Length: 182
Image 1 (cartoon, rainbow, N blue to C red):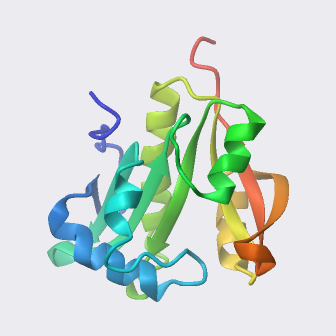
Image 2 (cartoon, rainbow, N blue to C red):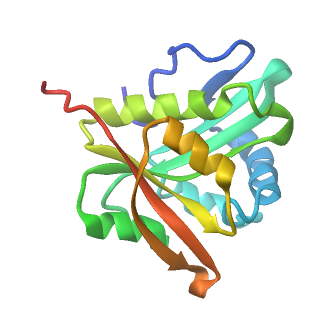
């Protein structure tokens, strides 16, 4: 099984389905992403395709009736990707799967969608033998809900940096994964 088609048979919350992102999801993903700025960077119509060209994993979560409830894009090490945060983790030198962005639609929040998406990411990272899953969360502008979510999932802060020309400060987070050889 390739990283782009992970086993998503793990239990999802009732009424939630996680699957690989396909082109028919793109318009909804762009709309959801851009509604969540500044918690995530803006994509716009021309931003999704370049992002996906670097993605090791692109997932959507749908709710009843196939409505988009959320999405996640993750990038493996070794990509030539311009994100300041991704490059920080690359310089750190651990074998990681980097969650570039996750967004959950407001009406679909508190239904376990974020957990379902991260469960797949962590399963893929473990299967690939990666040491950790990494991401960043805004500190300025603040995103306390995301910080609490990641802390609950076992992520710890491993650094901080100013981004976007000093207009944002992010916490750089990592979750160590168990060594599959043990």
